[in-house]
Length: 354
Ligand SMILES: *Cc1c(COP(=O)(O)O)cnc(C)c1O
Picture 1 (tube, rainbow, N blue to C red):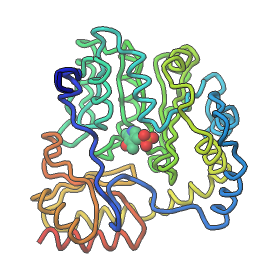
Picture 2 (picture 1 turned 180 degrees about the vertical axis):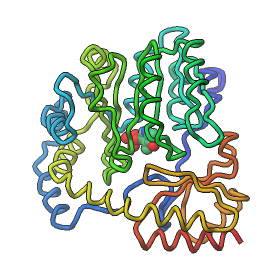
Picture 3 (picture 1 turned 45 degrees about the vertical axis):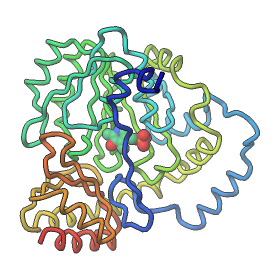
């Protein structure tokens, strides 16, 4: 027998998530914050990591890190925190927990593709509700789909990726109230959007808020966290791999969160650049720029494949969404970087579009 005879058909049908080679490029493809820890903090971190007992398994409950997160992020005391090896890990944990035979996962689309990938892997039926052409939520269609499909699980990226759009808070609340199952608000960009449902989590029995440190200068650590009532987290903890967050990540994240003001300042620097980058992109010939509450812009150009290749040739890496979804035809997604990176981006874009 060949592998193709043995592998599950839904896995044969998938393509692996593609990550472009970025060596030597101006890297504006993955919504990383461009700033590193200042030198003196990097040295302190090294000293802290040197003391970590890498000969021992991690404490799977990670009590110090969870306490630090609870304090830094003002997590309501009646909620529990589940840690993940990135929020990608949490998406998988949640999906596998709720994938009863016949269960449905519903999300507005286009959105973060990892939701759909996990529905496929876990054998959940996936229902995507198209966004409006403006990339805003189609509330009526979403509520109708929820009534018709009775999803066990709804993912809402708040703000959405790859569009950058932050859905209206009251519309999101209406979806949570209408949903018969769990609604996971994916707040990967909360430091840029400065909006969150965490303060309202007690209002809803079926709400979980998921976040990551990836978009706030710590993408290499791989740490996500899910905040929900204990009735939910007790189930997720059965599916979570016991040692999913390693000792170095636990120690480094604790350290970084002790200096959360530094991370917030790094987010501020990107936020200060955002309007200028948006305006400069919009001023280029033939572009449409969607309003963003995150650290990136979705830009429609006349020929995205050509523009992407030209940018690459000029040493600038962005993400090409042409072909990924009909509503993303000819769309590029560009991360907001340092002032210098943004200048290079705009110059290269101008060249790519002429
Ligand atoms: C980037 C991103 C994530 C991935 O987070 P990791 O913690 O790096 O796995 C999750 N959700 C959305 C919407 C994202 O854009």
